[in-house]
Amino acid sequence: MSLKDYLVRLGNETDLEQINEMIKILDPVFAYLGARIVSIKQGEAEIEFPFKETLQRRGGFLNGGVIMTAIDFAGGFAALSVNDGIDQVTQELKINFLEPMYKGPFRAIGKVLRKGRNTIVVEVRVYDADNKLGAIAIGTWFILRNNINIKG
Image (cartoon, one colour):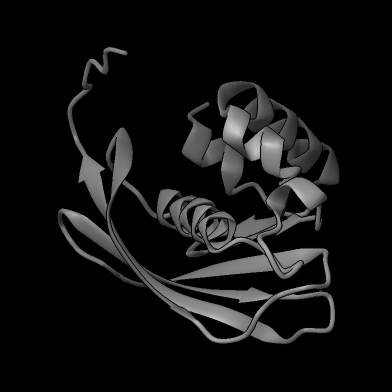
């Protein structure tokens, strides 16, 4: 079963737990954030992550880079749910920071707006624990159709 097929299974929390554990192993940044996928379905994904001192900036609110990273994850998982290629890469992210975010857990919700032949466009909104909208983004993910060899 492909990662995409595994991610879009619905209604089975055991699967989500297994997916979250697998992603934490494959992506240390996801693990560092303390993030987890809350839900994923065709064209939509939601992640949640806690407020931690190591994620805040001067002033005590969530660092903008952390918000951007969460947006990249939520948008990427939403894009992956409709991707008919073998992988994808983030091509562009445009983010508006609307409010400082102090209170976690935070939620980032990605929704696919359009899937084209080579790209997938996703809107992502980030909320705090009080459901206050703190950031909104539009991102484009490029669909990879051939296996690429990434060297470190």
